[in-house]
Each structure stands twice: as C-alpha cells, then as structure tokens.
Length: 194
Length: 194
Image (cartoon, rainbow over all chains, first blue to last red; front, top):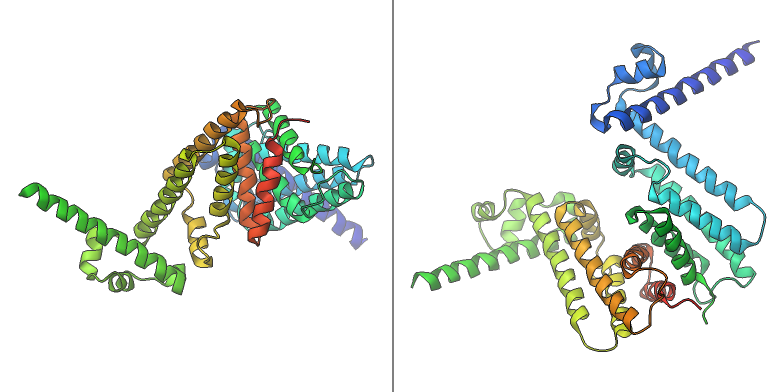
C-alpha cells in the first residue's frame, strides 16, 4: 500500500511543520524576536535539532513560513465571510469589520508578534494576498451597487482601494470601539450621494 | 567683519548642499537608484570629489538628506494651506487634495524617485513628520466641527487618522481624476450623520 504510506508521511510532515511554526510564534511572543534559537524551537516542537534543520534552514525561513500561514488564514476568514448569505450591505459591514480587526493586529495581542509581522510584511506573497483581498472587496461592493446601496459616481474598484487604505488606520487606533467607529466612517464614504 | 564672513560661508555651504541634493535627485531619476556614483554627483554639482566628501560621507547620506528636504517641503506646503483664510470646510477640501497629491507621488513623475522614497520612508524624521501632518488635520477638523460641518459622533483626532490613511490610497490610483474622486469619498465619510 505505497499510496497510503505516502499519505501518512505527508500528514506527519504537515503536523511537524505546523508544530514548528506554532512553537516559534510562542517563543517569539515570550522572549522577543531576536533571542529565539533553533535549539529552543526544536525543544518546544518536541523534535530533535537535526530534524528541525530538515524542515527549515534557519529562523528567518521559519518566521517567513509562519507569516505566510497567518496571511493565508486571514484570507480564508475573509473569503468565508464573502461567501455567506444575507443582504450584500450587511455582508459588507461584517467584512469591513473583520478586515479592520485584522489590520489592527488586535487578534494577536502581542507586541513582538506585531513587530515581526511588520519586518516580514514585504515580498511577493504579501503583494499577492493584498490583491486577493482587494478583489474580494471589489466583488462584494459590486453586489452592494446592484441593490442600490453604493454611491454610483465612483467605480467599485476604486472604492475597494479606498476601503482597504482607510481601514489600515485601525493599526493606529487604541480600542475596539475606535475600530468600530472607523468602520462606520469608512462606510459613510461609500453611501449613495445625498 | 568676522560675522559677515561667517554668514557668507554659511550661505555658500547651504548653496552647495542644495546643489548636491538636486544633482543627486536628477541623477537617480536619469540612471536609477543603484547606478549613481559619488563622482557623477560631484561633477553634476560643479564641485570636486574631495569637496563632496566634506559634505556627505556616502550616497545614502545624500539620499537621506534629499528625502528629509522633500518631507520638510511637503510639511511647509500643508502648513501654508492650513494658515489661509476662508471657510474651514473649503480649507479642509484644499488640504485633503494637497495631501492626496503628495501621497500619490504625482508631483515627482518619476518611478526611480518614488522607489527611492519608499526605501527611505522609515526613520525618526518620517514618524515625526507624520505626527505633524496628523496634528495639522486634527486642528483643521476641529475648526470644521465648530461650524457644524463635521460628524459629531467621532472625535477630530480619530477622523484625522481616518483621512490620512484613506488618502494614502492615492499611491495606488492611476489618474488625477481618480485622486479627486478619492478625496470626495473621504470627505463624504466626515460629514454629519444623516
């Protein structure tokens, strides 16, 4: 049964891979970005150092994989909200709030992890993810326009760009309620002209 | 007359300093960021290489000084608009348009210079300048609130943060008219609730 055997190996590798990323994020959050070592990561993941090096050549590679996983997770969240039923206007509000919370970094509650994300927040995978988020919002805004809930003097494409930048202000805000107010102000900019 | 003599020297040094920055910006724009040399900069500035090194240790130091000059120039522009007379609502529109144009980089018409600004757009002088721009907008929004032209359910401080982030979308837009639409949408978010 070579196929099953291969599947078992793949699944095991996936489990170890995930354990390494989680252990690294925990260690960064406990000790800061610069004091984490490959030995600590191996120990926390429950594997030997030699095994760890079979998965990742260095800490930077682990951090990058962790960051890619975070971004994929956020995209998945937004994509799921996009697919939900209900009136487009309500779905838009829910998605804008989810994106603002992601931008605020409040999901991580952690300075070291935020700092890390800022350092890593460059590169092709980020550009591609931003494009995907933009497209999600553009599609949803187009639906809202079809039911008359959107201003009609600016294209959904440009309004999506406006939304994503306006909501990036969540990073500078210091409370959940300020983030909710930001979403409310951003939505006010999208409404049909009086 | 030692005082006059000192003034002459200071003024001469200032002129040379400015000539070096301008020459460097021109060369970066002509040849790209990575192919500019200290010799070319000296030649274009009309000074010797040895003299150039008395002003700046390397190209990075020149580029950083050039970037600081750009930022100071933008702050000065915004500060002047802030001081102008007229109804606060109109001044707000003018300042938001000016800031959007600055953010769009359309004043420079030049990919290499924009790329350069992106590379340099970190560091204490940038953080301080952003705080100053935020304060300019916060003050003006407070004035607009006093004449009843602003929504009263969100503080001017938070609305200033919203404006600056929303207008940073100008960087992703591809025409002057798109930038004007962005300003219109951003202002719609600021209006008193219906």
